[in-house]
Image 1 (tube, helix red, strand yellow):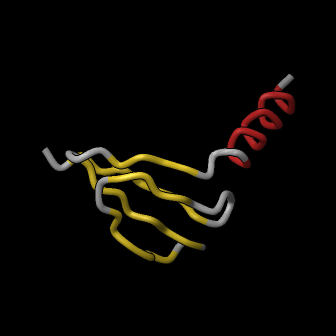
Image 2: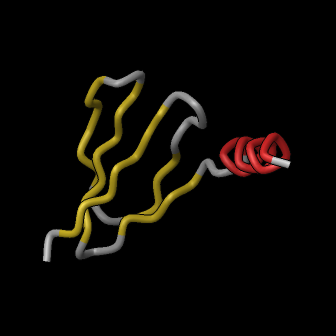
Length: 59
């Protein structure tokens, strides 16, 4: 049953290309473990399994 959960998580990550940064947040995009860019508010695109996005609340 655990492998089924992992499978669904990977499928979800595969189709999760877009993410939204709201005005009171900033996002840091990391590609292959290396800092790429600080993202401003708006809708952005990430490459699944290559990019990782960390959201930070700046309030």
